[in-house]
Amino acid sequence: MNAVTAPPTNKPARPFFSSGPCAKRPGWSPSALSDAALGRSHRASIGKAKLGAVIDQTREILGIPDDWRIGIVPASDTGAVEMALWSLLGARGVDMLAWESFGKGWVTDVLKQLKLDDARVLEADYGALPDLTQTDPARDIVFTWNGTTSGVQVPNADWIADDRTGLTICDATSAAFAMDLPWEKLDVVTWSWQKVLGGEAAHGMLVLSPRAVERLENYTPPWPMPKIFRLTKGGKLIDGVFNGETINTPSMLCVEDALDALAWSQNIGGLPAMIARSEANLAAVESWVEQTPWIAFLAEDKALRSSTSICLKLSDACPLTGDDRASAPKRISTLLDKEGVAHDINGYRDAPPGLRLWGGATVEPEDMAALLPWIDWAYAKVLAGEV
Image (cartoon, rainbow, N blue to C red; front, side, top):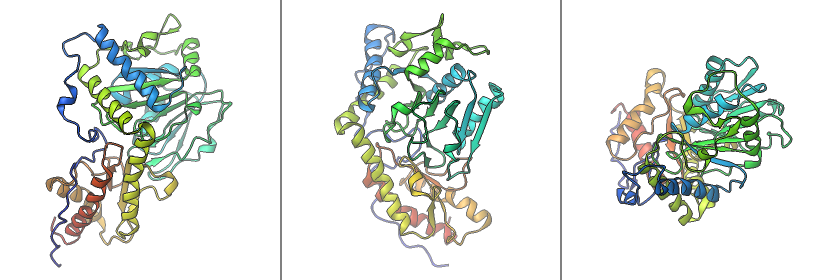
């Protein structure tokens, strides 16, 4: 085999393409946290003010209606989703949609932990969506807006009925701040700061529509409710959760980091600018894939492709077979990590072998463009048997 030519000379200025925790916003440094309310109670006026500011700025940037409630909850997006599932499900039948790892995790919780009798599962393989029109507006619906581990997003919310009687519970952790969420179609929405905002982990966001609040106040699940999941007391919503009085103690350092990310979002032009930056990252990858025979999108349908969790696979034109083919993405990602070009771009452990490039708003499109020739170089090294 011929030796591979020298690597490209232009490296990404920031080699951070991890899908969570994700790249910090451009220009970030620890000095951005200098005003954090450290050593203070989060229930003191300064702590409550900062937590309240996160909620207010989130509402403004995302255009969340005034009568939707926004809370900061423990345990990242996972905690927020679990709170919704344990607190709201069981009042009527539920349709569970799953086409990647996290959606399948919610299915497991509903079937094996909550053990709901009336639960339908609508599934699809990685790279595709189930038939969304099969959902029933009289039933609750649980789904991910964007499949972080498959690179597949729902193209719109037209399949959700305006006159539905069930609730829609949407895990939007890799969609919020990079995709336009139609709030009138969504009753519960969750995400974490660590995704599109590039914030720190372990804190979740929970948004409830008036219909979701009504369910909470008029339905009591038959199972014991852990304290960390409780959103009501005496049949009424605990208002404090949605006014900056968190269920457990938050990290005020992480809160300060979230405020910094929200301020950056506002300074660059808010949600439209965030969406445009993410879509520019996807456009760069799409242009490269069109010119590169050996690589393909896991989501073959362009309308379903995520602009944040961009998932790629080896195409049919790639000559590698067997174990060589299965191990190629990991060898590519390991080599690029060693070169300081791209960190953490191997596909998710449960997904088909491939690469996963985070294209959220905190990633500079020019860094994404600079990365792509390096992937070609690393693939050539793998094909030549040099790694």
